[in-house]
Image (cartoon, rainbow, N blue to C red; front, side, top):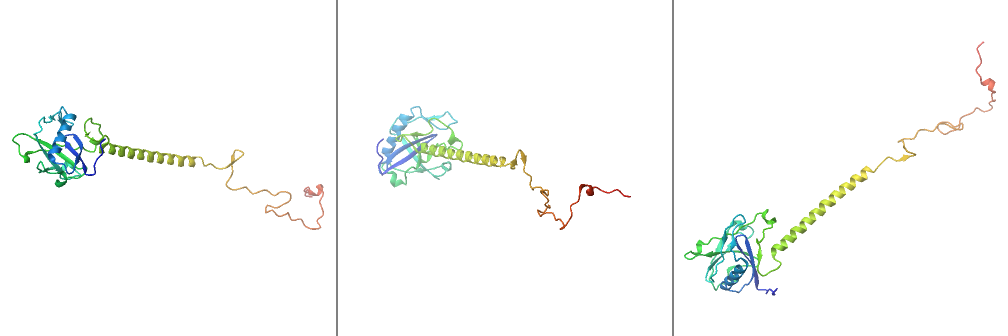
Amino acid sequence: MSQVDATDYSIRFKYGVHTILLFVDSLQSFSAINKSLLEVLRERFPNGLKISPALSDVTPVPTSDDVRIVYGLPNNVNDLSQGWKILRIDDDDKPVSKGLKDNIPVAFAFLADGEELDDAQFLVDVPTLDDEYEDELGKFEYATCALGTQHLWWAVHILDLITVVVAVAYAVVSIMGLGSEKGTAKTPQRNGSAVPATKAKKQPKDGKAANGDAAQVPKNATPRSPEEEKPKKAP
């Protein structure tokens, strides 16, 4: 690829469904620009320029170098659907003197014999948001740049899509992990049985009272025999 000079402008010439990216010298005359544009059109579109994806009509590329080419600047560079205004130039005028800037879109049209400048109509197909994601062969053509602006925008869209997919996957994994932790929380068990919430009170053992104190035995008490322990019958 030839080196691009600092004074070069990348101009996006638009007609129908086509966008032709050309590097032009900002101090180059429009007559020279006309010649370069015609050479590219004849080489790339020998069967003509397609006006709309929905129509089969094409505009033949002029074979004569004497054809009159009219250029138009967008009324709103951020919304090309608002139309174009005619750029009134002479053959010796230069892009820098007519307000052209780097990467600006410029519509063009061919004037037939007998037509005036104000008769020019700029046939530019402005794609909608849905159309931008359709793969239409020949919709964008690049004359001097192997990697054009449109390719870079596609790369940006792909990176955005990857970011969204990763974020959704991370959210799903986080939710599933949280649910798994809740499902595995169980009541502690001992020997196959759940441990009761409160422990039963221990029964008195070895002569101790329920409160843990030893049972009170009267002092000097004489032990009783088993026979005395038996209940006596009433007389």
